[in-house]
Length: 481
Ligand code: SF4
Ligand code: FE
Image 1 (cartoon, rainbow, N blue to C red):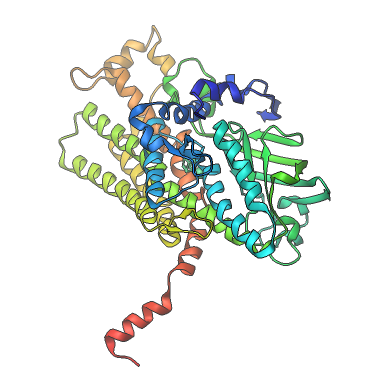
Image 2: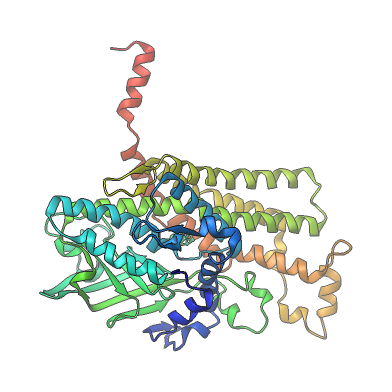
């Protein structure tokens, strides 16, 4: 059975890569305290797939090989698959309370599967078979794959071909019978370092004259010519201090990488689009649609952890029976479940593409993500409200353990009987982490900009919603000819 254990996954990513952090080259990144929590998050995916209780969500039979595979490598074959995807993401959010990174390649594969099929139909190319072959390797080796979309974009008022620096958008710079050479950068790359492979896609709908930018391909993340620079997250150096409590979520974390491609060679068999500008927009939209669906699962799971911590701190503070506290917790749950409803709804209205795979409802996926750009902020606001200002004034763990002042902190941090000061400290740091620390990247800013910033969804909502039809509805009722 092609399912890696978490330990096998860890061993498989121990390879030399060209990684920089704080201006220095990093060797053996898997031992680095800032990186390690993000690896732990991915290992959790491999771990849950081994546990009987979670097998129905975490694993599935591949339509390509007939074998049982990790769902993160699956091409959706039904509406049920789409729903289970969202449920699985909520489950992982609950287990890690952060971004577990493996959805990007998953969503890319599902978008490419149908796009390559339609590309071949129109241009008599053979991208679809190529892609299937590539993806069977991913399924049978249980590989983690990143999806790389976001270019640096340079001057936003200019098209890719008009940029002062042509590399502002990743593009083909050379070509021979064996393959192509690409140059550019992809930023905000979730989990790139933890992935075995990445699939690169264009960042926007391309026009005539921009064929070199309409390129999609698979590449090993340690390929010659790739440089990774580790993205900072607020409070990240707390992970390098002694002790762990100040980190908040001391076990798990997300990961964002700035990835530069300096003349990277891509062999023909790993190219899935080359110059077909007509399909670049479709690839972008379908990937974004799948990823916007994903947020109706992952962010809800993280929301569950934050709501749980907020309820816990109310209990520890002795405020849990106050009516306004109960009401604020209800509001948090209501907002979180609304996001989940959107994730489930866009999955339930999924449909079959000509290639045979299933895709979520585009309008509802965009509505889902639009809500995700807002509700986690309100949930976070309510969490801060109930936790109290102490989340940003508390002394350090070192002070708590100090011989001189530790007893004072213990005495004055204690609240109700049977609640130990350390547990209260842990929960407060966890809420700090989710609302303004490292995990706020995964929970707040990523909710805003991940899978596209709010305006990108509003454009798609405008395109998908048939306003003319709605006018007709009003006219029919009012008997307007
Ligand atoms: Fe997955 Fe959510 Fe992270 Fe995107 S933000 S990779 S959907 S966990
Ligand atoms: Fe994301």
